[in-house]
Amino acid sequence: MTFPIEHLLRTTLTDLAEEAPTVEDQLTRAERRLRTRRRATVTMGALGTLAAIVIGAPLALAASGGDGDRPAAPPTVRPTLTTAPSAPP
Image (cartoon, rainbow, N blue to C red; front, side, top):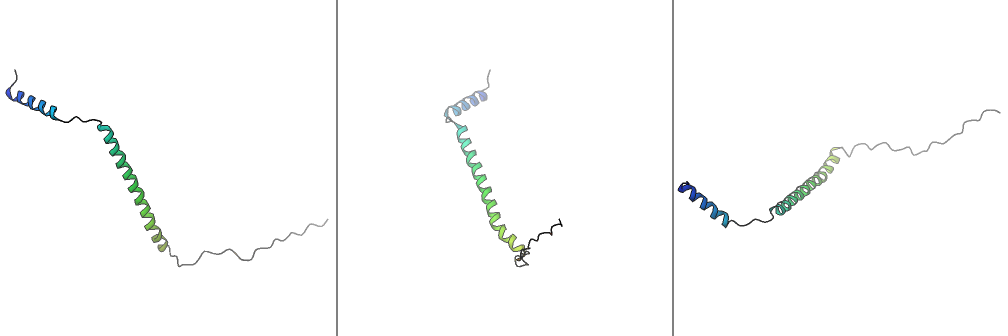
């Protein structure tokens, strides 16, 4: 024995199920969205890293004191090679 409200609910749900459009191949669309989102995330990460390098490199060079003393230069006179005196025979 079914109550009238149960019958009404069953018929309503059946009607809704019949009217609902059939969904085909949801997995392919979801995979495509996932690939697009992943590609966008990787691209934005690379762009952010590149921007940090482009902005940070000049700042790091400026902070390092570029006007200070230059590193020591190698000597301009080359040392001469001398031969050791040979032992007497």
